[in-house]
Image (cartoon, rainbow, N blue to C red; front, side, top):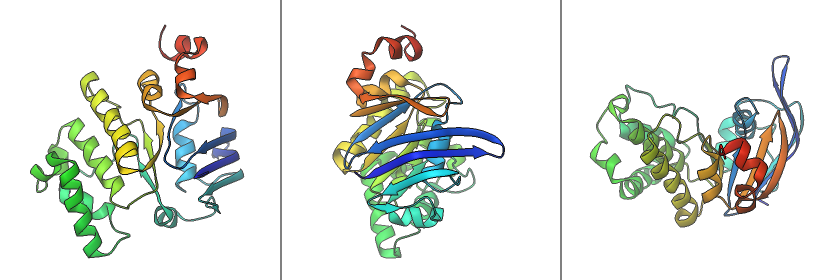
Length: 235
């Protein structure tokens, strides 16, 4: 198993958010985590990448416990985070964002990887000298994905990549996530507000509610589950 969360509890101050999350991501898999706002989905990703300390439990990545590691060391271990809202710096160029994403690698490797990102995402090559704040929402999300790939991760955590995008771009971005998993061989843990589409591209799925995993199954089975359809698909 690539990633395991065992009985993970976390809080912001006195507000408990995670109440014993158990979750697994297999090597090469695409796992979707869905649930209502405030369920703890983003918090789960933040604990994995070391931005929020856990109160109890353990997080294991590639056989190594990482919940006591610093975020920079978790990146070096092979986990990259593509955060909610993209977190693009508007006064930095596209090229500068990619350089920043590859900071853990040598300058030669970083340059080679930037060229690779331009091959994968031609729009970024066209915009490489452009300030990122002038990009469209979809272009910014592509940049955030490419920046996450620059550290050569074994696992990418995607937090609401379709947020704020048009329906057409939502489909394109989620297909891009699937492509990264299928063609680049990067495992994915996807948190996504569009539950129906997320479960349509995933191998496995989790439903998180009130800080607990309430359902876990193959994504196809969750997509056809009556409760999931009613609660998250509006059916």
